Image (cartoon, rainbow, N blue to C red):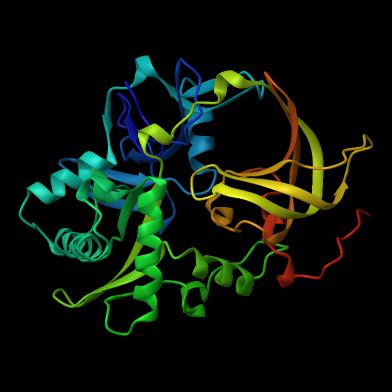
Length: 365
């Protein structure tokens, strides 16, 4: 069995997990928990409700809701991460009842006559992108409620996957041109501040204006106006690696040691892994301030496990970053990294272009 980022795992209880990234232990797959049937979980968040499938209703997990649910009710869906020396959400291969793959999901949508508005709009969007870019159906997948069949035809989004670095490059060129044209049905989701109006903003070092600017230039978040069904649909193109681009680094990692908190000014030297999850940036350190007594001269990379900071910076750009300082020991070398992830100080974390904040680092009190 070979699975990659965004592939879905379904357990005997009907819990739907999403494979996360490409680095996994031999016994199973590190995952996020995405959905659970109403027979075992009911969310109090209104937007968590999903359509009924046969006789079952599903709910989506948000923030750390899924993590808490698994630890409390299904602790067996955790894997011991040897380098971290802790348990994280994951599914052992022996506990996988079935899988759903986004590339197969696209084929299923294409093989059927459109059954509803969202199905029809998805096919219309794929046709537009493929005819314009020269890409093929095999370069795309579907995830989220579209993959699992519990989407709402009138309210759900179009969640697409784009496979591979070369395909992503061609797609981004198309999206950039499309967003600049008034004659195409696609526009940038973050074109105006309306996208985030009314949201409870909790990031402390990252303003809504800065977030909007960064999200806008990523291009993978769009709005598709389907004239035939008279609806504007929120659309996402999620980058996922082709099989030949994947390298499982788990066996090379010896230990990941958490050192403390760090603030740094860095220049990105390699952004080739920035579009994929987790996003990785190789960097050159310009300034560094840490909360630890031991002296760390520089950091070698930034790792982001959260989508807010995926595709956040490009090669040669200078960014300010604040997050968890870690020492990564591999079979060949020792590296230092700032990791952005779900943690107690989640909303203090940031990675943004330096010209969007003051040039000097804040000092620790």
